[in-house]
Image 1 (cartoon, rainbow, N blue to C red):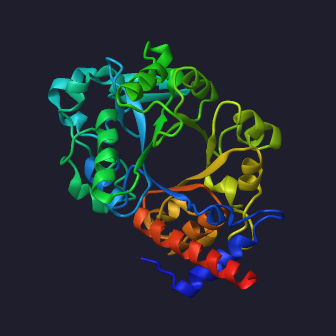
Image 2 (tube, rainbow, N blue to C red):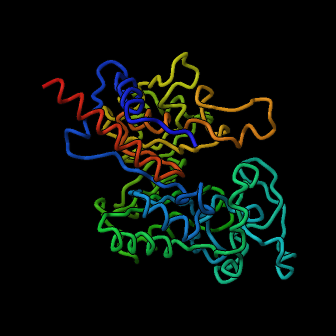
Image 3 (tube, helix red, strand yellow):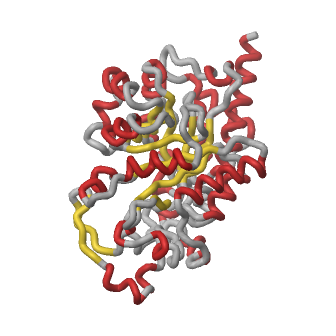
Length: 368
């Protein structure tokens, strides 16, 4: 696994701290705060994503938030899945009793064949077990297939609360609503159900340790009419609306219905720059618009890293699954002055955050 010495960490952090003109890299340090680590799917490099063991491990490794994606069941209950099609992430295909549930659907303009969460009750889903959804990238996790059940939203919230007790730290939840507009077309109001479930669980104020995430502005606007819980707009680099959303006017508009953005790394650090890292102005611009800024997910495999950080033989079939220098990416993201960094490597993120904070403290001490 790639590692960086403390000196190398500090040097890279200092390079990131150069930032765009007018940027204040130590704003959160001066406010006695530190950026949050958001464990997407938990410690999903070491455990299957969205399982109890992955979330528990992430908490023990130092994360501040556990992140899950939510999809509805037949009766509208919410469960933690990376998508509503289940065959990649569960053993549903091995259950003969559900063979007749296989269906073809059009989702997001794409034809999808498989088994879908919205066609099962919670009780039926809880007879399934989780599988590693990307075995080509995480073959080491296939040994854990079939060992843990699907979690409900209530399960995830309880894991976070239990984590607070175990660690004496505040452990929050980032919960993303997947395709709410699609589920509306099949009669499932995920926004209303989510607001209702959070209210039952006691998450009712902006101070609650939870962020509601969605890439659909209309869903966040609808949620704002039902709950005072904080909202975060997910901005994907490949989305057609990303260029408009990340302008000064676009960010000001987001501030009308959300308190934060979660942006793809390529929007925060220029992947085509000659030297790494090359921060864009997005973090500064979003902060100036009154928004908090989180990055989307730092992962260790070459498939998810910018070209300068990829390592290994590019001609090899296994190149996408090989580990690149994710440590440098984590340091660069923290050094960009973000309010939070999402990753499936919370232990490494904790180390990177500490190194950047050390670099900032040393730089401030030198300034006297």
